[in-house]
Length: 583
Image 1 (cartoon, one colour):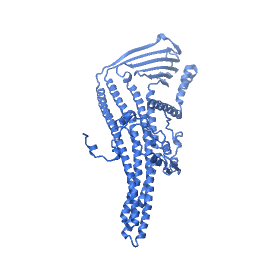
Image 2: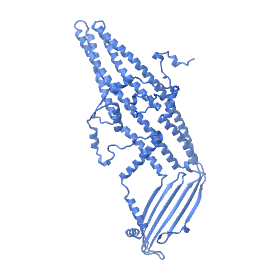
Image 3: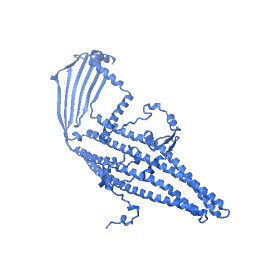
Image 4: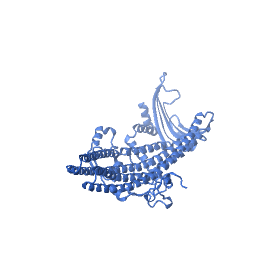
């Protein structure tokens, strides 16, 4: 064997080149090289399709702080130590969004899903690129007559799948042979022959062009990347909205905690006042009543504080921060929302739905998947056709026994023909075609249901938004009444003209009104952002997007409308206006 390789390496440049090529292939490239190559191709694909879908691109990478290290260099103890970090963070909402993008495990998983979808496309595209191959087989053999020989067969070439469904390949084979013992009569001790071959196979009927399964796989892989790009973009928007919702919910809870503590202090003052007057002017039962209210306020404060801290830990998990970190949220963002007021979404119901059909990523994907199902029916129907394939081959061998560089064109051997496959047995193809039709009907119903569900979400969102606005206005008025009632009852208590029970009830109403007002404002903000997201018009890349009206200056007058639950002048109207047909 070693002698054969030595002969191949020394007797000719061609043989030596084949030997070196084999050595290079055996050596291969490093794993790091393949990783970089994969990343470069996938990132190009993502950039290409983002430009195609959105007309712009964003920086995309799935690398993390540990991505550059080999897995075996990351011990479990390091992860444990990382999760035990004791940093102290005081964050505004914009900073919380940045932390979420950097550290959220859920966000990272979504990026990786997009990466893997683009990676699948790189494999589908590979089928249509030139595929170079090189292989070499060395062997020794003998016979009972005593002959012993060694041979090396090497082959290099390229093949390519065509968009027409055909396949073309070109190869050069190099055959080396040496007889060590027992050389046959008439045979040379050494021989070297090169053979150049060209092969073509092309379907004419079934599987031609876009109806070829491999071509369809590429088409679907490209469509899947479009869907993944849209899904990832929608996820980014929804993720940002969820972070904003959680942040303001926590700020609302903070406000409620402060209200509960203030209420507890009021109850303590009331108890002390009643106890001081219990000597001659207040019954003992009133003292107990005041004390009971104080204890209830005490536990309400403790419970609200514990609930907030639990929700804060859940928020840390969503951000991807260690639970051991101290996290504090700044109230300035809630104050900015209060100053901005309730921002309306004055769009007609049907206009809002049309905006969603034009812009919402889930709806665009549903429409395109419906088109995919049509294409699957066409492909299944094509498989019912007869098969008619064109094939051709040509090869040319060098002059033997060792004149490996001399090719005589007059000795080209070629063949061509057609292969016919009559559709005599198409039961499986028939079943596949019928299944494709059933799948198409199912996809049609799915698209119809998706459109109806989105129309329902948007209509419900408009109603919910108006409902929350009316609730907010009502709770503003309720708070004013509750404050006046507490002040009046406190004055009457000092004058001995009201029972302690009336004071307690008014204080209960006040704390409820205070907490409900903030909660109502937060709920309005959350309902508004979700509605805009369902309409496909919310752009979370805009700074402080929760304070921005994306429809300002973009909505034609004909597209404007009143909310489906609107009360003229915010005055209640009779129920039959909503419940019965108008005359």
